[in-house]
Length: 142
Image 1: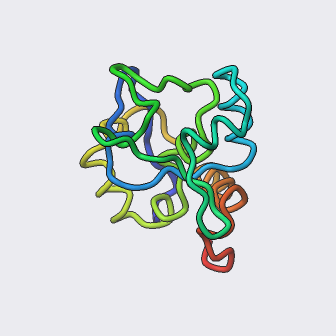
Image 2 (image 1 turned 90 degrees about the vertical axis):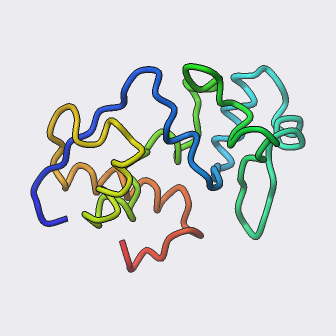
């Protein structure tokens, strides 16, 4: 983006980002933390909730929603939610492209609200996505 700052605040009780179509990718650490939070073994968490595809892990989608952990008013595993969820909307493809950021604002009411966030800070957060999910991003593009 060409401005020096953007605005965002996550609004309490909003689950608009969780309701969007798409996959939630997770890291091995996300898997372990979520399993521990639910007091089950990582292997059990994986067999219930995870699909492994070409060097990636992603959450399975239940038939009637985008995520097994989406509840009225929030995320059932909020304290240990996956990196992808925790960093939203500070994803490389959003913070580096004004059009993508504004398009996301059509469903995310927190975009354009709250404190100003310096682009450099947003890009640092976005880089955590590249680190967590290297198979999703070409590091030379970010």
